[in-house]
Image 1 (cartoon, rainbow, N blue to C red):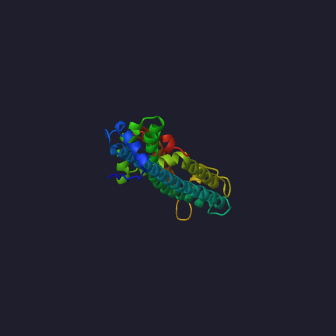
Image 2: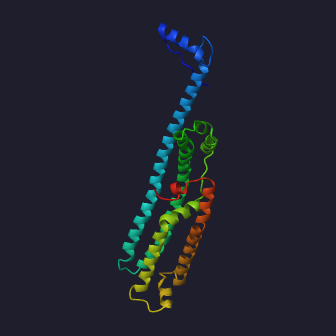
Image 3: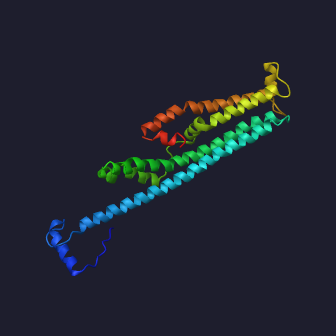
Length: 258
């Protein structure tokens, strides 16, 4: 329902309005309310979409900071593990080994957060490409009656994530976490190969991977299994990108750090 509020005018203004009435939509002697109603309708919708867009941008930035905070935790934890791992104690290689799975936990947390972040960022991108871009191009019909309005309504009423947790993990892994894992593995390998003295055979390297009640073969098997999962995630990244491209999702906006 649209409300038309009466405006008090003087006698001179009333004469001007009556004189202009034949040129308006309502016919001779009357002032059309249809045109004013449409103006109010367009104004309300434009203001609502503008405020909604600003709210989504604010939420997107907030969730982006949350995602970045998880990355900062992972980097800080890696630096701490490096410090303990090369401190000269006998359990240094065990700390570096366990750090792999601590970073994996951070990766899973960040993937969950990143998947939710893309839900908000997807709405921002939809309004930018379908509403704001159409207005800048002068295409008011597309901006006002495009299919994007129904898509945005469905997303608001029934929120969905454009990417799964697994896909989010593959994206974050390829951008940041794979380098953290590689650094940890290189540090762990150097630690067991050189402390307390350089290893002289592969069999000795195999045995040195163990600690306490965990034999060496078990630690190596765990590292191989971890990289098998990471490799599968990175291998599925291309399929994820193709799917998002088909859906019109801007990977340069989501798949890459801004």
